[in-house]
Length: 137
Image (cartoon, rainbow, N blue to C red; front, side, top):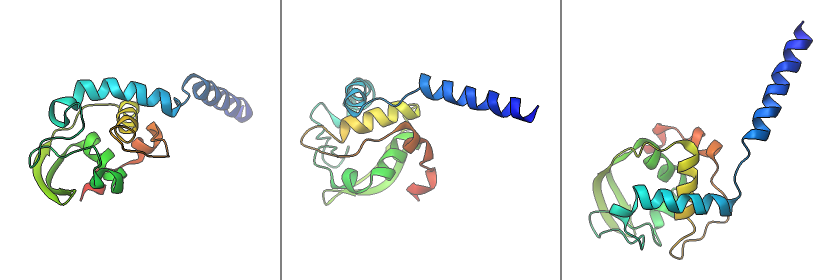
């Protein structure tokens, strides 16, 4: 009986893995562009330049590139309080965006590879899932 249960669980796990495979980085970036247009564009603008002193830049952002996990957490949980981006202080609020793990991974892949930004790795939904709110403390 135990063998039957273990076999059933392994079959379900294998089927789930086949049904939900990670997108390629390129597919994720394409999906991320649409998410950016819907959720990020209003503040960070089409150029990713943001608004000085109000909305931090994503383009050539030292904060973004040096704080990948915190950036993921900011999208996932929201962000408030002071951050320093490219030697400029920002002290605002970014509301939780209400995106799922895959959407956050996609928009991060887009942002990390646009406007001259370049990030060799791929952000995955599993990586986003593992980011805890405590990283923001």
